[in-house]
Length: 311
Image (cartoon, rainbow, N blue to C red; front, side, top):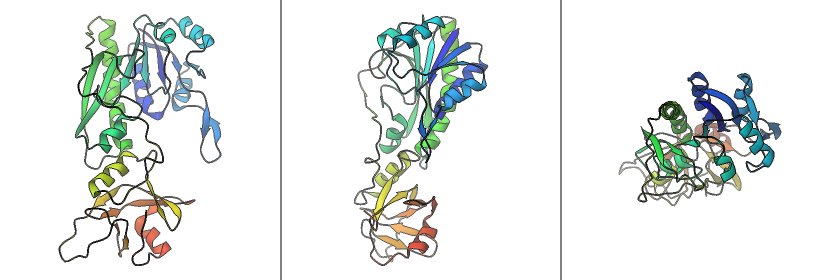
């Protein structure tokens, strides 16, 4: 089949490469326009745009997918189908009607769970044991179209959203190619999504990522892993923001003193912070304006005083 692939971030590259290597013909890609990146905020093309150009594939970067010029360009490629992976824009009805076999979205959850922009983050944040990836036919609703295929993936107790998404991008790429292969020979049977078990996964903001040390340790651990690498969890220390990486929950013995929520205790080889339940051991931190460093190195540099708090 003739394909126009829509995607933007690094997460979409595994699917793009798998489609290029498949029996299908990727004739163009649709991606978000160049955006500021890095400390210098230099305009930078998306990972999908860069990879497509390496393969000599045409790149379309509409500011809005409803733009008439874009719709004309898309129609000129005469796509049979448009696979989508993390494109980052809502497609209007006029665009959905162009490919003869529709748009197939690869979504990183088992629908109807976690519809929306951040399914992997919310699966970790809410303590799910299993997630997966789903291919489905796009329609005007948010991730509501009929399902074409599903794969599952266990969530490990130490998974960050970045690590889990990296695995799902690989397994999801295989699912997407299999779905298109089946579509090409007429072997697909779309299944309507259930009305039960619907949950939503809105984008997590920087404000969402602030740590509340009065919460239980297991909840803090989940939040930090869900927000790693983006948007990155943080707390305040001595009036400045302190980025916090993944932690380990430490079960104290009866002989060890309890630690108040938010209290920082620096030992020779580890740094503890109290929560509503067990304390957690800090891994990496990122002080304002500095690079990531081990919590032990940070504590030695700032000379933690007894009873000091983060908040």
